[in-house]
Image (cartoon, rainbow, N blue to C red; front, side, top):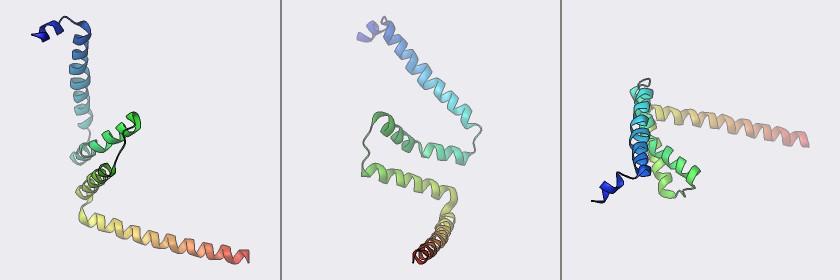
Amino acid sequence: FPWLDWLHTPSLLISLFWTGVITTALTIYMENVALETLSAAETTLIFSTEPIWGTAFAAVVVGEQLGFNAGVGASLILIACIYSSIGLDGISSLVKDFDEESKFFLVDNLASSRNSSLDER
């Protein structure tokens, strides 16, 4: 069996140790210690958005090309997280507040642009 020969290769044994102990066991332990301080909602939010962070990391570090499907998937994940956190009533109030603020923003900008054009005359 070839794997018996692998046991005599120091670089392979170090790689197995690194993969098994450091990158798996230690990181899971540290993650569990850190998540003990968070609420269930915060933990759910972190785990739900993990694919988005992984994709962003791949795009920045490795230069991964993201397509339309990645954008749609990320949007659906974020919408689901927002919906699970604040519900439909919260989303409605956010949209309503945004509409009111954008109206004031547009009115203020129109008024200031009119005043500046009057001042130029």
